[in-house]
Amino acid sequence: MMMAAALLTSMMSAGAGAGAAERDLVTELTLANKALAAQDYALAYQENVRVAAANPLARFNLGLMEREGWGRARNPVAACSWFEQAAQGNIPAAQQFFGDCLASGTGRAADGKAALAWYQKAVQSGIVYANCSAGELYIRGQLVGQDVVRGLTLCAQAAQAGSAPAMLRLGDYYRSDPDVRQDLAAARYWYQQAAEHRMVVAQYRLGVMLGQGEGGAANPGLALSWLEHAAAEGYAPAYLPVAILYGNTAPDPATGALTPASLAKIYMWSRAAKATTSNPADIAQIEGIEQLLQQVMPPQWKPELDRRVAEHLAKSTVN
Image (cartoon, rainbow, N blue to C red; front, side, top):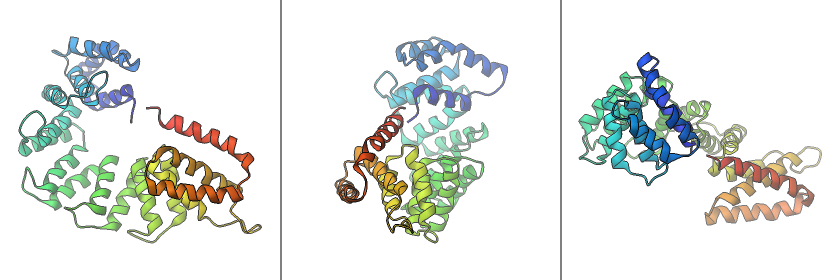
């Protein structure tokens, strides 16, 4: 999860253009953004409210603060009200988020037709992922007539325009969505595209598919590479699979045993998994790995390896 200031900065870059008027909107919020970076949420909220009447970007920021619960309880209804006002002020990201509000019926009756209109405005303003949001409505067919092909086409347009979240979403659709005909080769393709854009969830899911031979030939080495990318970024579900794959790597030809590097990796990733899971099946596997390691790994390695694991976990929980 991003830090509040980082998320707000990324949304502002999507929400404000390069013209003088837009730059003035950002300049007005200098104090508010400094307060947010310092986690002084009360001051950040106060400063955004102060200029909100004339500044649609401030209204968008207030929507984010209400939605994310920065310094207050999460309030989706209030967030949607601010997003509506910001959308009417031509803030592109707010147009998408207000479309989401209309699609979900947050604070008002759900309205698929109106949601599609706002998604289209967002796309025209440069928020290509809004095409995927529109596609979801067609795939589900609950607020608009169901048209799965049209929905997938819209999401593919977003992916082909470079939206990594759209690539991930297409992978999910094709792998196991109840409304989409399964196509594991397509799922693997789109996970690959998203993984190359550093989407850690896609790296994990691609690694699983490569390891299990879903959508193409199995490739344990490549599976390990992608899963370890995700694990290194702090994606906890990847920890145990990485430890297991290292346990299945080729032994040292000279000794017939796993290499010291593999043993260290097995230990570190299994320890990271143990610290982040409550799943009984996972814990049982980890305990089995620990018992095996006790027989083959020198105990004097543990302090240094434990230090590395602690550093990784501390870094991964800083948001």
